[in-house]
Length: 297
Image (cartoon, rainbow, N blue to C red):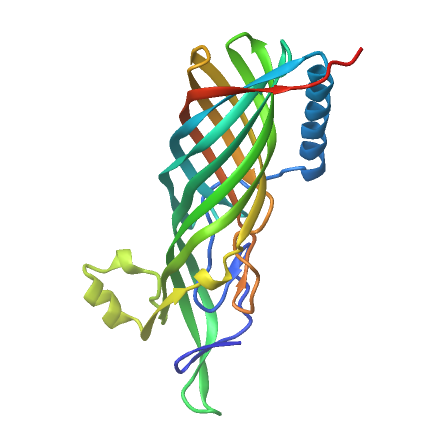
């Protein structure tokens, strides 16, 4: 049971996601169905093939430079689409990269990026019943509704490695793992609980004041769950790269998903959310260097 002042709410069953007492989070997005072992195996297969290809080279030519662009990010998990909404974040990413062509069809790229993501969400929990205690022994059944609104803002330092396969001389696809460390995380919001027979029926009243006069009680409380955001994330990047100007300017498009819960489980939070984002950006080559290797006979 959870207590809001004099209100005690028992036997809560907010499905499919429950955050008590302060927030019930659902993000309006599809549930991710990643197969971790399949994606990692596929990445390792690509790495093995490109290193076999690299044995044919006497010297490997690496390009390096700066990259950056836009990140359209969100958090994915089980959702109640009928009673939830979300506004995905549009932010930036920026960093450095290096990449090399190991073979006619194979290459490799490395990157170190600062990336921002997050989401703004709103969740309405329809009318349910609880027990309202007037005294320790006098109580009555009381219908109530809950409305939760909140914001995630996440800033990561991300390292990634991705084998590339060239479908055409200027166009490649890539797939590889990434490791992210949380630089700064924010998860704040407000929970409003309305108690009474008319709770949740705001649209039937001419004004907010009339509605508040019609219900028995409203409680409002702010929450801050930043301390329980997971400090690391491990995921997978899949995307394409187009050489706009060969050896100088590239355009990248990628889809990125995480495998680690963003929010750690606590007594008040029991929810699984995962980072997912789409990125579009440019990579500018500013130099190159060679790494000599002995050719296999």
